[in-house]
Length: 200
Picture: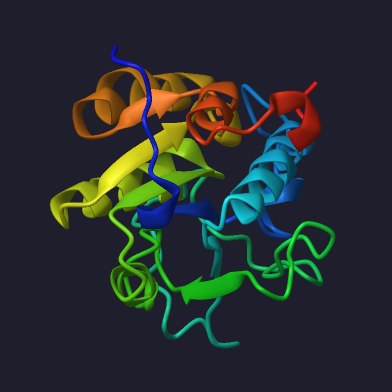
């Protein structure tokens, strides 16, 4: 694979469903804490290089009338009772300068203004990851590719509900429609010292 190149002037960091509900789920192959630690490192580096930091979260009406439920009772189904703060992104990682986008389906583009936020800022490269790999991340990456965006999937910014599903997306789907790289390569491409960024 060629060296990863990222132009800060036309790139954004897009964090998917790192919110109260998903970070409490049983996850594999990484814990929520591992993914949030990577998110903290990348958000610090991105802001330092002038990249927009975009948090995408799932929200819907109290009666869930604007949410399309899954057909079968699978891990991607939403529980009937949602914990307090289930739709909030981590307050300790978010800054006032960050952008928060609300979606109502797996894909971050469906029912949201994500594409508008990217296009009007001249963003052509989306650096992304989140929870869960083969739900929101895969759905979003597929649409981003169809829209003609260049996508970089950060391996250690992703985790899932099932190890096999996670691995399939990482090895069979993402390489066809995106560049797949660990956060250390993203930091290097941004010209960021990994130690100063907090990745040790």
